[in-house]
Amino acid sequence: MSPDEKSKIEKLILESPWKNAYWFARMLIASDKYGAVGKKSDLLAQIAAQLHMILGTREHTDETKLTLCKNIITSLVEASFQNAKSVIDRVKLFNQDLSEKMQTLDDVRVFILTAEAIMIPINNALTGIPSNDREYTEATAKAYLDSLGTQGLATVINVWDDLGVEGCLNAERSAVVREFTRLRRDIQEMPEMEANMILTAFTQEFERRLSQKRKSRAGGSLEDVASFLFDYYGIPAAHAPDHFQADIEVDKWVKCGDGWLIGISCKRTLRERWKQVSSADRGVLSKYKIKQMWHLSTYDEDLSDDKITTLGNQGHLFYLRDDSRKLLNASNHVGMKDYVRPMSSFVEDLKREQTRY
Image (cartoon, rainbow, N blue to C red):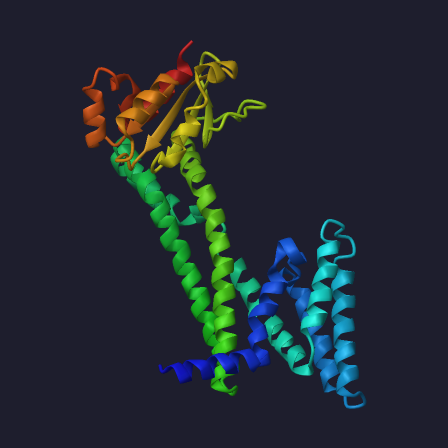
């Protein structure tokens, strides 16, 4: 594409009212600034219906129609959030900024299309995409443990995320393709440039919302695999000690037979947080009757000798894959052998702790 062609496209985008399809979508969903007005599909549908009616009248001038459209949006939005005191100021800012951005009836038409063809379909599609990927992983994980017993623990932890991610991404992909196809069909009579601005606004906003959902799924996935393992083996888990504030990422707490606790962390890697984890020394652990912290790690190449010895001295124990090179090396080292164990022994070790008095 030549520089002249690029310049022409940029000019068309800047001058077209349809560029606001993306910005209206961002305003409608922004929670920190505008209160996420656009998450209420019923409100958007009501607003769009009223705007259609105003635009269809013949007894008013364009100027009067524009004023009516702005007023009806303000009225309906504020009425919908009148009892939401925590966001009412943000909602009022939304109405104010939207009014300033809505300068012509074309802007109103863009807003209607944004609500009806972008925001409401995205809201509806997101309800069909799991917020938790556990449904895609449990059956496969159970099959591994049924077939391999505790030898399958490392595989279950390792593939848990992959299975969940693949299942959820397939669901996302289907939703995006379905809604994109619908939208493209609905706007096929529009000029190409305007249609492209709408389609790209839809795609950008949908992907942004999906990425937020992925983050929430990723945050719960590691805890899910811990919950699954304890449910499968019938191991009861305890709540974290009251007021425990040390910087330790723990998925489950298990009470031992002697009344002390063991913190269980299922992680692929220890990553860069290990120095923060090591800040919880034995004194801190003892204060809350925490006997040890057990880490189930499947990717252990970043688990250096320094990490093993530093954390091991602070009451941490590492369960590594039975065929791990790191496990073999540490098991034969006088300074590390007490801090590592094969993952296949995890369940029996835990049950032993629960019955110890």
